[in-house]
Length: 148
Image (cartoon, rainbow, N blue to C red; front, side, top):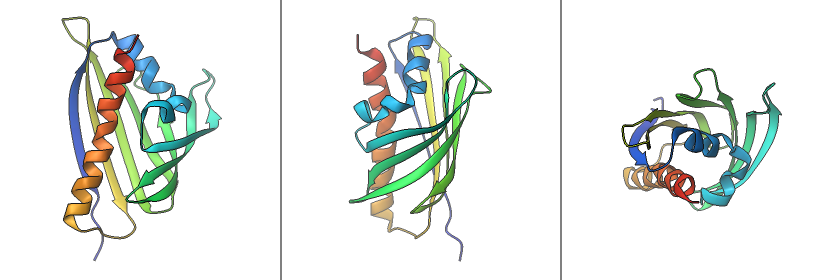
């Protein structure tokens, strides 16, 4: 029986202009400074604008360390930053995106969508705990982008 991908979405408003939020989101090599579950981000490839297009991550997950490589897509910038997994150890697939839009107060509304399919199925309570940790990344982005 195939393992189904787990999907989740989260929304927040960040009290910072879109250009600052975008700059924080695309500064991928600095993610380990503010995304607590990420231990390392190594840029493997960049596009002509110097943006990271392939990144190898080491993260803590479910009491162990995991490695995966994501490919980033900037084609809908600065409205969307999306990614998909190229290679992973405990994941079969990862796709995700940040959707950014300016709001009337000068801040930025952000929707974070993520879909993860693991190689091995997990019990429901473990999945829920992992989902909370993954969605926490949006709260950590908010704190980082709102910092002076």
